[in-house]
Each structure stands twice: as C-alpha cells, then as structure tokens.
Image (cartoon, rainbow, N blue to C red; front, top):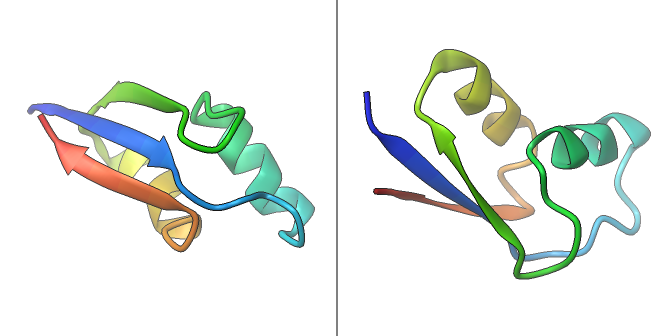
Length: 59
C-alpha cells in the first residue's frame, strides 16, 4: 500500500468533540498543517469521519 498526505483545510471550530479528537489523532493541529500516513483501513476510516475538513492526496 502507498502513502496518503492528509492536510487540514478547514477549522475545527463548531465540530463535535469526536471529530476534534479524530483530527488530533491524525496529527493535524493548525489549518494547512499536513501529515503523511500509511494507506490502511484505520486511517481511511478516520479520514471518512472528517472528510469535510481535510484534503487527501495519494503519494
């Protein structure tokens, strides 16, 4: 499997506590911050929960 580049593009303000914790678990802090993750089902599930806040690119 490849890698995914996950970037936070919208603010966490107004999100549920669960979504905020998912963003933190992905390692994202500020808007425009990004992290690279292995492409697996766990990461894909977390991205699906906050897909309206992040941008995902395959590397």
